[in-house]
Length: 435
Image 1 (tube, rainbow, N blue to C red):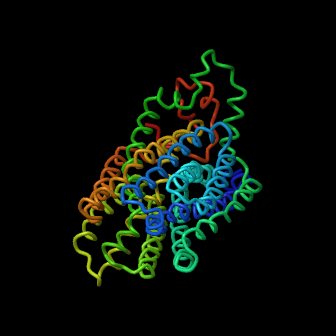
Image 2: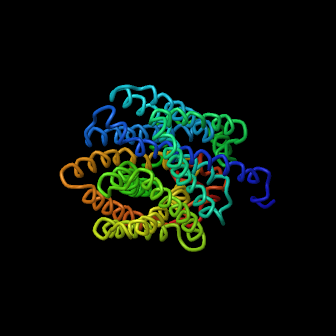
Image 3: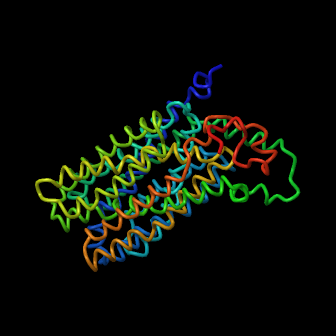
């Protein structure tokens, strides 16, 4: 029977829909901090560096949660980890509205961000259901869920913040905990993951159990080790840019470009709507051309266009500059999910994707503080030139990562478990372009 028409893979539309909503919530949660930052700074009396430190602490928590979640998803299941993570950061968002000091806010934000860090596994989960021939397009559309989350929360903030304050916005953010129950009831673990666990359970016990550790399997294999390191570096640079912009772009528009909050919300919604389109186009191009080529061009294009915004913006052209940048901003995100997931095999995919991506998140935790410091010493414009540089470096790193190494929808064969010394990253049935 054709894999795409089987009952198991026929579930991918349901998995996609619920995964899309999960990423929408993820995007909304991440954007809320940037939108409320000006008010939180005023209420708690924070400096730019302290405000940046809150953003950095969030990224560190996301990194720790993502690394642990990646390991847990290979051991306990993709769905189980996503469900608990979604519940954790939704409830944590509501608790932020109850905080009254910098220390309380920082502690609750760190704990809830452990759950946010696991949301990278949504792409892995969906990738293991979607047919190969349209995987990049589907995962590109999936990534628009993050942009949709930005748009939703910006719209809510434009209504809630002036009338009810920043705390109410965080209270509303508890509603998505209902989605965690829906995913638990309607999404089974992927067939590939179940087959991998069954093969592992039937394999003979090894004399040295540490050889079965997922990180040992990754780093003892030359190809897997290379992919992990390259993706960690690409993620460090890309996420430093993405989170640095998300954290400080609203403040930049408000304070340096003197855009009123109501107009600023419109600018940002427009930017993320165009980013939404950029992700879809990137996903389509990734299928018909190259995941790697699309990612590299998107990163370098965004890097080269940021100086245009900083040096050439006027009141008349800022809208068009922001819209064009939004498209470029969305391109690497649109293909990253498929590109990264296909770099690793089923047995180590959750650990490798969660680990490499969240090493990037951990290191990118310095970005909000660095941008805040540079903005204090110079300006946000100078800070955003640094953001352009890190986007460029991410594209250069990705240029060394080959396309489509593994088919994420394939079931692993016996070699995936029983002979890790030969090919710890997967068996012959998973290989697309073994190199």
